[in-house]
Length: 172
Length: 76
Image (tube, rainbow over all chains, first blue to last red; front, side, top):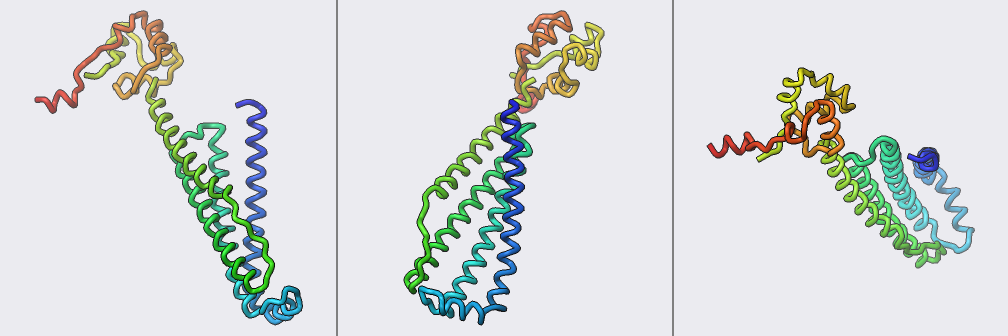
């Protein structure tokens, strides 16, 4: 491995660890926000009643809570993705073409699919809220779906690579 | 029919152990054992050359095409 590759790998590892910590922080925030939305409901009611556009807080608050729970699910999926990716990165200096990496990539792909499905649900909720007078900006993006396909294909590539590596190990 | 590596026979003739051969050719004992027991899927020319030089023999002295013991017992 060249020095540049080694540096890039180390940088990737550090970035993934930082992202994982930030993601865990987000999870903690979301876990605290759900009960807080009940505890501070009167304050939030008053706040959203005055804030334009004036949406009925009795509709807005439950939707926000659903949003928070779904965001928590998304954060959990992201945590699994980052952890599996860190495990893949750890194998690169030695031998990345192992069956475990094919399984990890497939897991990352399934998590990505889950995240994209949650995004779609977010979009439906945003549409519902916008119909009630809100102004939530949500746009469909195909790039996430392309990433899902890419990851499943990559998992197959790694599976084939691991088979070839196993075959090569018996070539003396 | 399967290709076998007659390492045991040639080592016996040359009065050499597998460990000594491993040290001479730079191939691990584990890999030489894989070759010896017929579990290898293939052999590189570089490996064959190194073994032939260490044992002072020809590739034909090491390689033999024998009936597979498993298919042989099925036939009988």
